[in-house]
Length: 330
Image (cartoon, rainbow, N blue to C red; front, top):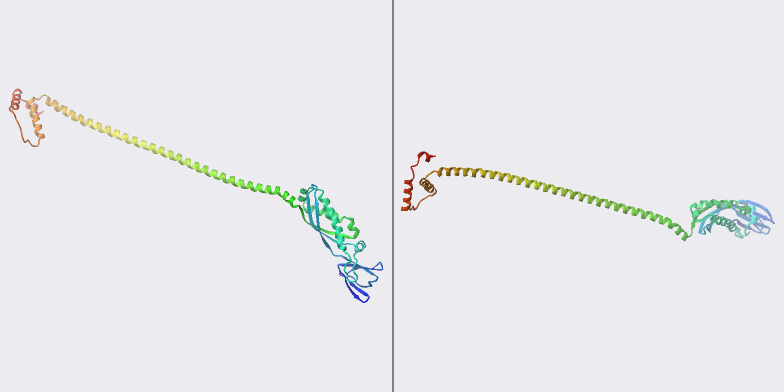
């Protein structure tokens, strides 16, 4: 803003280097330039002050895509004055000669014109494609189209203004559409997560099944080996029993053979003894029997010899022939 000081009927204006001042006197341009300092008569002067620095304005556009979906575009547009004389002739930049303040809102008028051109360009670009294509392309494609539209618009060149930069910070759908667009991705991610969970569970079940199979195989093998061991122990027990039975049979047969031999020897001896006694007379046999009996008895307390017994014995002695000494010795 220009600084104006009063000295009587005259006034002095001092402007900044970033401001372009045009001094009109009686309808004609008296001075024009940046950072001017001069005296003027407020009764005959008219002064316009234009900003020459770069300005930025906020851009917000809400439009519809080709498939009638709402999208919001946010960003900034930078502009500056390229022809101050032309701009001063199209838009009023006059200042109050007492305070130096602008009498109107010329900057707002310029930004409104830029905003209208930008809004129209953005709406046209949004309507050319469906929402999915616009979101996939992102704000860069829209920014390039907007730069081309603003740079080539004759309305801005006609007032001596040029756009120097366009930045788009956001291209977003409505909240409902955003949730709807997020749903497939969310479902896909959830499906992958569920699939991973199922795979982990399946792997765990497979491992448990393998462990159970190994345990069953181990138990089966142990049972088979135990059965084989029992079978072998039974075979060994039967072999030992058969061996013992065979040994007992051999021993019994040996004992029976020994008994047969001993008894045969006894029977033969008895037979020979009986054969030897067979030819002896009864008296001799009686005597031998008495001697045998006497040998068996330890003591004889009583001996009863009756007359009948003695007569019978004597009769037998008389009947018997005298024994031969040789026969008795045999």
